[in-house]
Image (cartoon, rainbow, N blue to C red):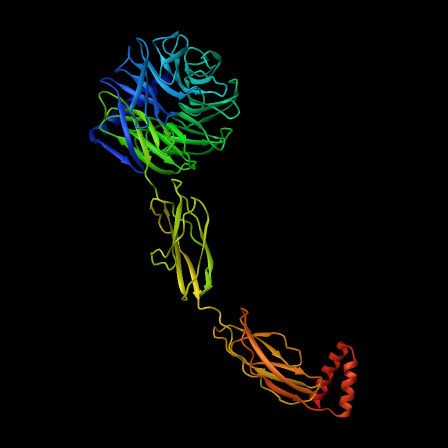
Length: 625
């Protein structure tokens, strides 16, 4: 063992002893369950130490747990495989081992309905400890077992069935490779016969703790490296092809000790890594969650912890796209739930007056969680296997977005308003609208899918300023807070101008002479006003203005034929609301002299542009005369 490794071991051991004694002296039994409900819990064990390291839900909705037992079996410790039903009641258990120490660290259901177990043994094999792979049927009866190792210590931490029906194992070896220990990747066929093996490492200690087959048929392994990186140890992520040849590697860490314990393939094609860090965070060691893309490049990382000792052992992506983790918050089992960006949603701590630790968590088919670990606070004696079934408490929907829609409007007009919310449990939600901002729901919508944009309509019967807010409620009745308010100003409505005064001006005149008429009106809203004069001869002035409300407006006109005419005027405001027509003003244009009759006939024979010019000149001449 290197001097650096000895220093690390001494420092961590002394610190943990000191922390544990301090915490134990003030620790009481408790179960903090923010966001989670214990549906049931079971302990399995005898007078000596027993522990669980991995749990998986089975096809029959029960669970299979693997770990070790010193209370039962034939040796110092035996691999212990326990099958329970959906309520956690034991259906069977099996021990595997010899005279030495044998431990099971991972179990997976296999395509044939049985189980594959990996761990290590010093009862069998070639050396001190060897990787031990055990295949059992659905009743837990052994079908075959294989050991892999040499003269040194070799351990297997993770197994997964591969797409070809075989298995991939990850662990470490001191018997082979280039350093004190190397990451060891072993591929076997469906009967456990080795297809190939690969070691990865340098001159120091390197270990692999978790392996996953990737979508391209290759493999991703996570663990730790003392040989490479920035500090004492770094998290080491390795990607290989389907033959185990390295394609790329990534290191994550700082100046001190950092370790990766679990790796999962995520729905976006990347990876989520869980472990712990002494280099970053708030305390002695913190849980460390790292999200990377398909090439292992970091997208984000989060640390969780306080000024004590925390470790993360297992992570799984959840159905809502977030992640759930389990580990240790000295001296208790600690569960953390985060969203897709790593932001904490809730956490729960379970423990008693002694050391309790969570090693594996899986989301169950009903949306809950199954947790395996060990407890010294409960059970029959020493440490016992601890299995808990958890159900998330119903959480309220998230606060809806500020309503979007019209902020200025009129009474009795319908306007659309939109908002959106999500429910952390994926429940359907409805929306309660407070249209006047008094804190009382005035209207509930029907139920919508979580995350659906919702649009409603509303009108107000009274003018005023309204603070529109909305809250969300799930199907269980849990409500969010009110959204930020949208301020809406409602006015009485745009009223048209009053009926204009009857035009004032000459009531008799001569053709070819321009006469001016005036009128005015009041707009009840004080809006500016346009005017339209109808001259009674088929022509109008066109809309004139706008003018201030009450302002007198003037317009001029020339008649070219004798006759009796009626002049009317109407008004409209700048928003287009029109008044009714004014009362008419009668105007009479008298009979003309013979010369004027001749000029009128001549005038009517001329093209329209010429007639317009002549009318203007005639008007000027008549005015000056």
